[in-house]
Amino acid sequence: MKKLTEYFFKGLLFLVPLAATVYVVYLVFIKIDRLFSFSIPGVGFVVTILTITGVGFIASNFLTKRLVLLVDRTFARLPFIKMIYTSIKDLIGAFVGDKKSFNKPVSVALMPGSKIRVIGFVTRESLHNLGLSDSVAVYLPQSYNFAGNLIIVPKEEVVPLSADSGDVMAFIVSGGVTANEGPSK
Image 1 (spheres, helix red, strand yellow):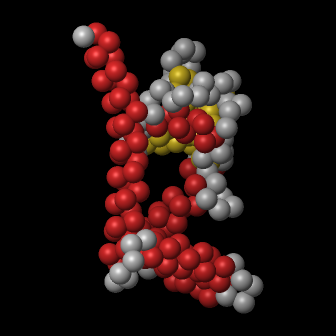
Image 2 (cartoon, helix red, strand yellow):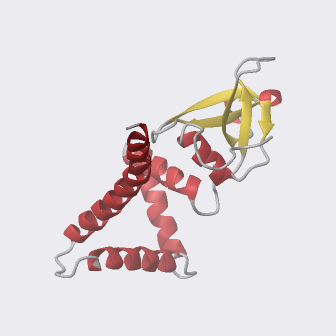
């Protein structure tokens, strides 16, 4: 009976992540396909990917950069719209593009001299505009969640980690149970 229980849990460990991943991918395909009325499943998804890539090509073209800049400035000036637009733009830019923000993994002491540490990413090294020239901004993603906390800490409490930022993010978001060895100092 003990062996049967062990097989059951190993089956769960294999099937649940597999089924959840397939289901999420399926939902994305279905939601995107519903935006269009194509009779062939997946065509809407392909059209969406091609459209996004085409817009990216046009936006990076020398002739259209002025138009992109005009749209950017217009949205950045409108009250309320500015908050939404710039927040989303900065969040997307934190993961892709030239201004990636989650590329400096660090370990931070919660209190000076404390052995309790948290892992995060330096998102801003200069806080001079806030009157905090001796501090840095560190973002602490939460495990199993699309949220996090921004903390301001003295520079001397931050220790850079010599690990791949993607591995560190996976380590944090998984609650420290990823298959890799986790971040190292």
